[in-house]
Image 1: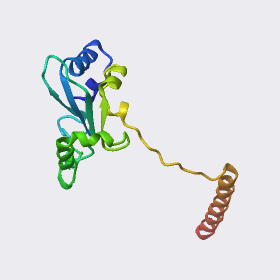
Image 2: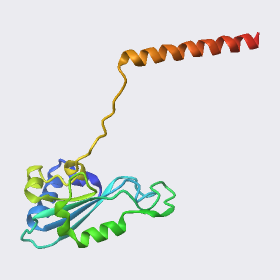
Image 3: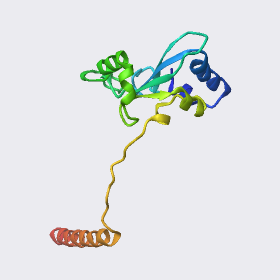
Image 4: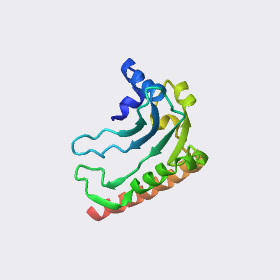
Length: 167
């Protein structure tokens, strides 16, 4: 389904997500990259795996952040067998209980039903996945400005040399 359904704010979107979590047994949300269905559609999509119970049963939902499916994500969709998450998805799906120890920064992890309910049944991966950012240190502005002034001097010297060559 399109990603918009996973987090849409309309009554229908919310009702559908609540029904999957509360009335059925939602097992997994596999988030796929945009481009998987190109050239027909370029939107991000997800696969929802659930068991129809009509009596609930959702305890934890397994989330997987799929990066590649073995094909390029452009309109040509050329085969790239070395770039696929499909074997990992299948292996982890078969051993979901082992996923409980994984962190929210990993490619797959479990989220308790109570947390999903507390987030208005939002099923978007980005709601639960933690992103780790590398700290970047920059030189102080005075150092940058000094370097910039030196570059400008070099440019001016080069420009004058070029003007001299042209006469």
